[in-house]
Length: 276
Length: 276
DNA sequence: AATATATATTGTGAATATGACAATAAAAAT
DNA sequence: ATTTTTATTGTCATATTCACAATATATATT
Image 1 (spheres, each protein chain N blue to C red):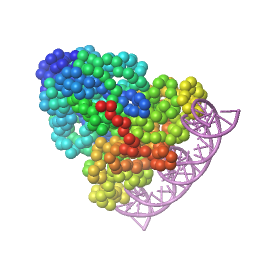
Image 2 (image 1 turned 30 degrees about the horizontal axis):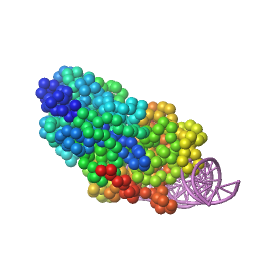
Image 3 (image 1 turned 180 degrees about the vertical axis):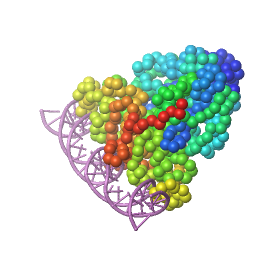
Image 4 (image 1 turned 30 degrees about the vertical axis):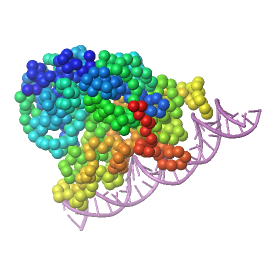
């Protein structure tokens, strides 16, 4: 009965977006207060139905634009996961495709038709259970937070929390805020210099509060947000182990090519023939 | 107009599963040949509509069971992503939630109502473009392959390609097959021993073809498939850089706690108060 | 103006991890 | 008995990581 359009079950598909930003060393999420039932008065993620001729990514981008008043260049947007438990919306079967986004700065713009107001809520408040979320949005936010912490291991993404030009202190503060660490400024400096993702622009920033003025950096040209094969940050730059003590894996080894060559790379390996 | 059940656009939701297994040093994907239009005669992913009272994960597990005849303990199943381009199914708007799965061994069981036959196809054949896939399933498979290569950096997952008890050669061969590497047996041995995810069972395997008989290992108790905070494999054990030369990031540094303490862990950091 | 304070940046070295490969062990094949 | 094959342990040079000292350059204070 696969793919028979005539008798598909009635399902609505929505997109919801977990919008992250940082303000004053605090990781924040944009939530709206629902003005209509169900969950009237609860906080919820911005989101809505996908339109008939709209791609999922486009729907998420539209929601993002509506909610923030900003445009594509101002954010990093990525799909998170889909949620579709039968009971997650009391009215009918709704499958939502969740997205997450990072923005450098943000002041919520509009309250939609069913939203009383939009506000930036600290992630810590949600993690502590101090804020009630509608539907399964608590789970979605937690998953998104986990995901962002994970993805920050890839170098250029942290810069999306910063303005186009930033000091290394600003960049380091992103990691410290998201990961709850206090990275060493000296080692951080060296790491960024060894990275090919970042580019030093000018020796001095215009404005600085105290101390020696910092140099300004930017993301190097051609560095994509979605770099994946890139080398991870070394261990201390990776996020610390999960809250509850987890077993750690200390694994190591190496690759070899025949007798004495260097490690094989993927393209060196011959592909088995198709059986077609 | 958010969440108004009365006027949601007509959308069907399906799940599709990319089922991986390894046979004779080759990474394989289970595909079915479509027996009905559209894309009659093309290969496609096993999948189908979600049922009215069925969770997304449950729908994927059901498809998996139907297609393989196996049960929950025999596989590792994880959500991949959702795909919903307006034109991806010529008949109507279909959003599919894609999953991927790993199985130790597999012989396809049934051809469904619209499937002529099911078969295990080498991933290499799909990557080389030698196999035509229906809908956007080519993209889905490629994404899934990328994802599995990525996720294999987390130690215990590779064991899902192996029987419950395995030799380290078998385990190493999983990495070599999926990553296209030839990892060093000696260093691999050391790595696994340092890992807390694996447990040595018996000194000798019952059956072996040639050479010194290997010890049998298993995944340690309490090791979850979804371990994430776990330490990654070191660089050579991580998958090699993407085919086209990518910029690499060499980043390093450390954490500090006040003056001279150890690096802060997440739970050490006090949470900002909720504004509720 | 001199000094204190704060932040940025560079440098240094010990500890550890990695990668390459040698050496030994234990079986089957010859 | 010897060769071949795979498993396992050992070794060591090198690279990376981490902790922290030292220096640079600004503002704030006296």
